[in-house]
Length: 136
Image (cartoon, rainbow, N blue to C red; front, side, top):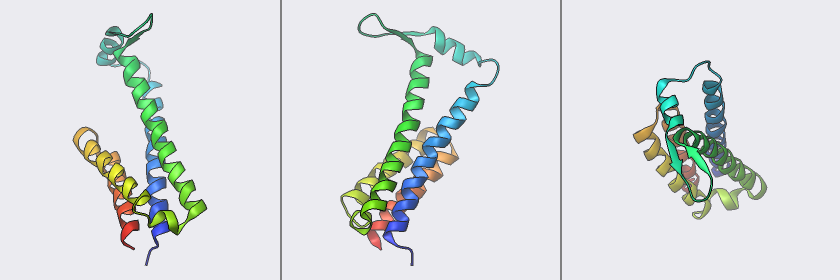
């Protein structure tokens, strides 16, 4: 039977890899020659911010996308390190595994509603792993 620690590790690293993949795909898409027309329209749409700073809708899109990838990597890595250091005390904990299962369940719902199959599956795997860690 699979241990709570193994499930916790799988859930953690699934989220970290999802974040790394997100950043990699995003950067690869930006390296393409020629931006789609919608991206040019986003670049032209300026968002007024407090103070002298001006950003475009494209800037927000890129910034939020990169931030999401970094935070997914950090969330997954931090949880992976945590379970490596503390072990079963974390993996079977309703506080840690329960919180992570809830967070990943929310990401699953958001991914299902707004994204495509890769983040949907990754979020489902992570949710199942963290929830499973509570049950074993």
